Image (cartoon, rainbow over all chains, first blue to last red; front, side, top):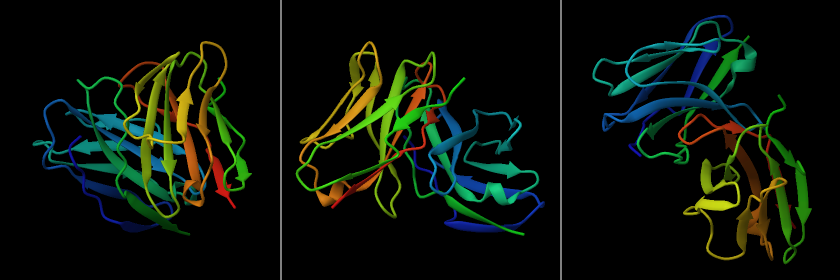
Length: 112
Length: 113
């Protein structure tokens, strides 16, 4: 799987939007961009994924650059419950059943 | 629909004992993945199973570790003759089909004394 690069940590204020960046300059045409998060002392949780177009769901939005070499996870209004480690992961859609390869992720801290 | 269940949530074993970790996937999910998270480290893939078959065990240590997912019952991750370095959080995930998003359980925290 292609490699992703994320900042180690970010800080946000409660109820403000948060933009979590991810660089994946070696992404291939068949790689989906997935985001998971891990709250303290819990298992990872799926957040969102996309291929080329921007995606929205009840948890977040995913903005994908036109060249697909970077993407941004957007939390529209951060809450204290959003404090977690956020992982950006590439998954090859042709490699059916492949595992998730977690990097270091971004630790998001939310201030009240 | 209940989520992925893992038990026990916490397990303490002395060096040399066996540890058995159980994972019940979400209803309708036939694909199970096991991951390990060592203290202060990231999650690492261990093994991927489909009912009664091991599909990918490239992340499993060569010795002492084994996994199964029988036709009936939960998936089991078995660690024989545990050592202190096996102390970690072990997470199980399931999915309804390949290349789909994975749903994780709460993990089993293994402590080897």
